[in-house]
Image (tube, rainbow, N blue to C red; front, side, top):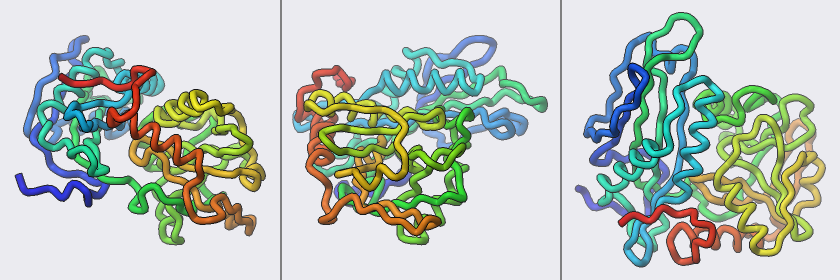
Length: 339
């Protein structure tokens, strides 16, 4: 293996030794098996290609100072994949197969887990696709589940530093009663054009408003949104937001720290009253927000007055990272520690 510069990894794909797969056929799931192939062979009429029967997850494994490997919130990701599967009528993957496949993929690629203190992690990508052939619009009768891993650095090149985001009213990420609450590729495809527009204008992400009334904050393109004011952690509630496991974890930690937690509709105007705000997700953990520009309305909401992450965001970020790395007590039992 070439020497990896662990401290300067980007958030991208790097070939590792193995991926692990399980197949659903004739009414049963196969035992997870490893392969060195990076290719998938499927029928040209597979439902994932034509009707969007595709779901994925994203989680991370970390090497602690004690040398142990910790996978963060493994079961929670398995449960969310099950929820997505029900939402787009895919065969529901049993929890034990999800967990066995993920753990096997991590162990087989252990040499790619970045060392403690580098700021990098092993990103884990479970993927479930409909591979049965259909021409009519209906669910497949065969599915492929696979897990691959790759070492990654920060999702945002700025790291834990506030960046500007933009409201673009001409775009929606998901419909109010559509697939927004499920982790499917179609939601990300729907965000690509707006995301590219935002990046060209110098923003790290789009902050979407609700698709129905364009009054309330929904979420950022790749992440959930949160705001902090008056000792309260506030995050939007909506029928088109993906339930972020990182956000769920931060809400619990905020409560543990004595903050109030509110999950509710957040009108755009409330941005003017926030003391701190951020984007949250597996890839970035927390990416603090510098300001929010609403270009169509010619408004700008300054969140960080000094250009630095706020005190609560910093505390939450450090606490969550500490738990993931084994530096802080895992009082909620979020980590799966490998032998």
